[in-house]
Amino acid sequence: MCLITFAWQPGSLTPLRLMGNRDEFHARPTAPLDYWQDNTAIVGGRDLEAGGTWLAVKKGGIVAALTNVRDPQLTTPPGAPSRGELVSEALQCDNIDEWLKALSHGEALRYAGFNLLVATPQRLWHLHRGKERLALNQVAPGVHGLSNADLNSPWPKLLHVRHTLEQSLVEEGQPHAWPSSTHSAMQNPQEAAITELPDTGVGLELERQLSAAFIVGERYGTRATSWLTLDHQGHIEITEQRFGPLGRFEGETTLALPSATTS
Image (cartoon, rainbow, N blue to C red; front, side):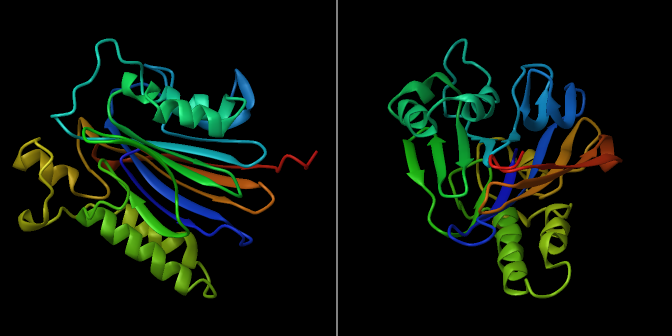
């Protein structure tokens, strides 16, 4: 994914609310949100070119999501594996904590830059692999945003969607506070002002195009908007909306996964 905002409220009835956009070339083959044929406990979209994914969930209450880090000065190791496989591995490893620690102790350096979020109803980890640091942290309670830099880097689109989610939680007693207002912010195609743009080394024209929460393009753009809730018992509900070139709507899927104690 390229833009995520999420509310982490451990100890509440709904510890995690998360929404994100996946930006990608429209020609890249992709499977829509569904149960995986090779592991029916997992639900997610799938990159059919490299085999990984950007967001997926597992029965019993595990969520994993990935963003790439955009930094031309960050060297990608020769033969680096697809970063999308990290989400798949997070949902299928025997011990999430130990697996993440191994990555943070150097295994993550095999990959190009990334952010990985992994959540259960009790814990939420953030693993950042950037040019200047490799770090694993447990996320503090609150509302956060993640794009193609570190957690809560103050990019305009990140600040806007994070603020909108914060406001929706304040208004939670009102009908449709979640996910409607955050969804509207996520699908905003407005580009940031030149004075507000980050400098990630890709040039002004591309920087402006990528500054929109929802990127509209013929060859490259927002392919999916996804949102989910994870409750305290491990029940997950996830929705994916899909888009083609120039933002053309191509379909929507909603699936619910039971908690581990539900038969």
